[in-house]
Image 1 (cartoon, rainbow over the protein chains, first blue to last red):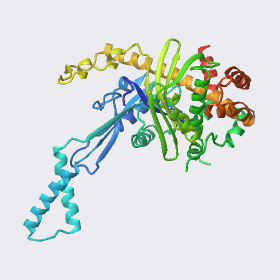
Image 2 (cartoon, helix red, strand yellow; image 1 turned 30 degrees about the vertical axis):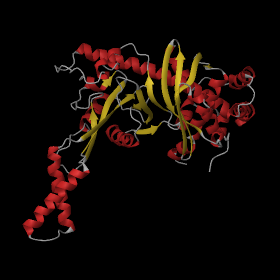
Image 3 (cartoon, helix red, strand yellow; image 1 turned 180 degrees about the vertical axis):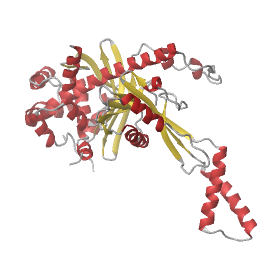
Length: 207
Length: 234
């Protein structure tokens, strides 16, 4: 989901904690440390997430001017994942099992042998495939202490919160009716009414 | 209680906020106002989703909230979950879908001026059988292009914050009514009008409702965010 063009779809998060005095240098180092590391077929990991340039998921070498837009810190979050089509994996696995049985002169393979064979076949297939990629932009308004994340996917959001908190060492609180009310500020009497608020029922709730 | 529990327990307030927007936009024939923004146009368009538990009603159309299905769903206990909103403010038109429980924005279209050509899909993409034009590969973007991209981004964020500010001002007014006078404003002023409106009873007295609800909001201070913004401008 892009931040720089087209219509915007996003959720807001509030940053708990202030950036340190020399945050630009510190954050730049932390961002480079958590920039996306593309997956290699022989890696143990099947999924990798990390930062890329905002709007440009293939730009992984991030410079200062790529990230800081005056009072905004902009990044892309890219996630690569190996996705091997099920029918292809099953067919290749069957072929490999047949070959292994013929070579060993046996009728069945043990569970451990099957698992090793599956790992070997998967690794071999990964060499011929390209990881599936998804990317979503993020814009941190340092002045407001608000992060706008341009995706509403729960899975992508969970990944973003994890990578963000590990990179910047601050906590993100998701926007919701509750947090927005708190942020806008309630008076003392309103706060008391807020604490005991019950839903309004206009019609008959369906069973 | 943990923060996340408190967030979960108050998600219904976002649905009630959308209900109130629906009610007020019909009551005032698509013209709402806030103390900070003055009068502006606001109405529901394109899509409207109401739900209760696993039961969901999705309505699409030019004015989905005006359909009989919408009121029937409301009377069956469903509340708005998401709605397409159109806002007309300061000669600018904006539309987006507001998701009640996350207060999240989807498909927000901004009246941008900068970077306009990039926002528009190339026409050839719409013509079947023709491949889209290939982009020339070249060196990295020049400084001028980078500056333009930054400027376009600032414009988008400025407009986004304007829209957010307007929605927040409306939400603040809603909270003022929902929580004012220990809940009495809601139960004595808003709820009777909401009940009559939801049942389609004889046309409401919009002026009387406006007077009573605005009087209830009258003594309230402007929201903290607006005070901060006013302070920074001054």
